[in-house]
Amino acid sequence: MPELPEVEAVARTLRPLVERRKIRCVHVLHAIATKPQNPSHVARLAEGQRIQSVQRKGKYLWLQLERGIVTLHFKLDGQLLWFSNAKKMFEVANQQESGVHVDVAFELDKGALGFADGRHFGRVLVYESEETCPAITRLGVDAISPDFTPAHFAKLLAASRRPLKEFLLDQTRVAGIGNIYSCESLWHAKLDPRRRANSVKPAEARRLHKAIVSVLGRALECCLHPPPDFRDPEWWFQGLEKILRVYDREDKQCRRCRHLIKRIAQGGRSTYFCAHCQK
Image (cartoon, rainbow, N blue to C red; front, top):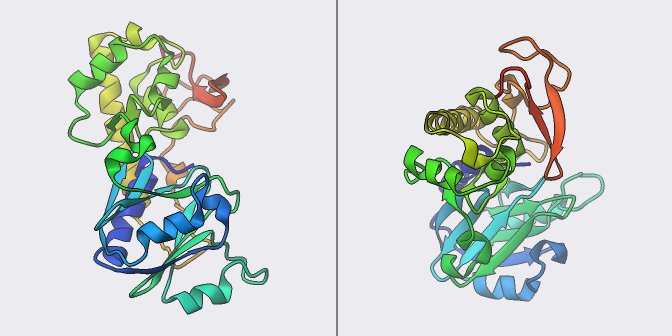
C-alpha cells in the first residue's frame, strides 16, 4: 500500500507533467472508481479547468484546479499512468491483450493522465475546495511537514491510550504513516508496538520522532531513485526491501540483537517487532 514516501514521490514526479495543463475531457471507464460520486459530476467539475498545482497530505494526493480539487487516493494498489495522448490511451486501455488497466483518464491539452486500480479500492473524487473534502480535513499533521515537531508529537502521544502501533496508523493524529513504516520506526526507536502511547517518556518520544523522520526520509530517497515511471504500466517502486529492518521478517534474526522477529496482529494488521530489544 502506498504510504507517504511513495505518494510524495508520485507528487514530485507528476508536477512537471500536469501543472498548468488544461483538462479537456474526463473519461470514467469504470464508474466504481468515482463512488459515491457520479461520473458525470466528476467530469462536470473538472473539465475545462486548468491544473494549478499538485498537492499532497498524508497518503492523499490532489490536483488543485482553478475552481475545486480532484482527489486521488491509491488505497492498496492504485497507480498513475501517462500516455502521450488520449488516442494512445484508448488503444491499450482495458484491452485484454495489452494488460493495461485504466479506471479514470484525464485528457489534457498535452498528454493524458490515467488512474488505475485493478482491485477497485482506489478513488478519484471532486470537491469544491480542500476545506470541503472530509477525508483531507480529518487528517492530522503530515509526518514530513514543518508542523511535525518533537513537541507537537509528544503532546499527541500523551493524549492517547492506544497501543503505539495503532496510534501511528491513526491518520487523524499523524498523516502518512502506514503499516510498513510504523513497524520500521518503532524498531529504530526500540519501542514495543504494544505499549500505550501515553506511557512513552519524553526522551522516548523524541527518539520515536527522530526515527519516523529518518525512516520516511530514507524511504522517500529510495522512491525517487529511480523516480516513478508513469509510462510503464508494470513499474513499481524498487529497492525498498533493502532498507527495511523488521517489516515482513517474521522468524528471521533481528538485525540489531539477533533474536527472532515476531509477528502479531494489531488492529487487523500484521505488526513485526523484536520482543527482546523493543521495550
